[in-house]
Image (cartoon, rainbow, N blue to C red; front, side):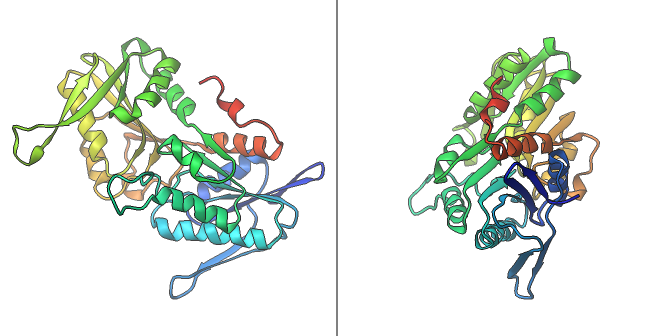
Length: 324
């Protein structure tokens, strides 16, 4: 299958870095194109070389790369890929970032700290990107860091519909793991017709070392609780929130997150957790050691492909999520 798709006088070309080729192949298949053959390798000192084996002159180019570990390598590779397309006279360059690296560094908490999420956007713009397409950014404000269009895609319909089809909705409660995710959890409630609960973290002044305790706001006793978050990294926060729900009488807990970062001690924490199921998308590759029966991975490829198609055909990406 060729990596080129034409519509009238327009030409689409689809490119992928080496971070998550399986997702790239799925998106390409949904689009009815192939991934453009690319020669990419690392020199002995770690420098990255990229060369495309087809001409990109005059094409609308889409470059997909998910910022998985080792994150700095794959961010750099994507920047080099963008630069190569700019110098190859591409008509437009859309950067697809299923998981946007450094998204948690979106503001200064203390003096002398960087805003690394803004830096990533600046680097992409400098490299030659015209547009960014990302899935469930950690915060909405990141959209304003890029000087150009940003299409923010949501995995909520995919994840919520999966959960809604397998549980008794009359017993379902949607739970935000902290105050910062309440708005997202509220949209889940609207879609599933379920009540909302919140796990609130506070410092216990009566315990040495300021141990964090969890309070649950909302009715969870005897309920099937679905914890909703944008990402699970080491699993500590989400597993502690699940423990709090069980301690307050929850019948079962399901965890859903768009991005399964799953680094460090995540494998052991998820394995030993009382949570019955962890549901992620394939925005990131799942580590091999996390091949557990309680992990379900749903494909975000159709969502990305639909957005790419709308961008290429000058349609509306927002219309894909108007029902939310």
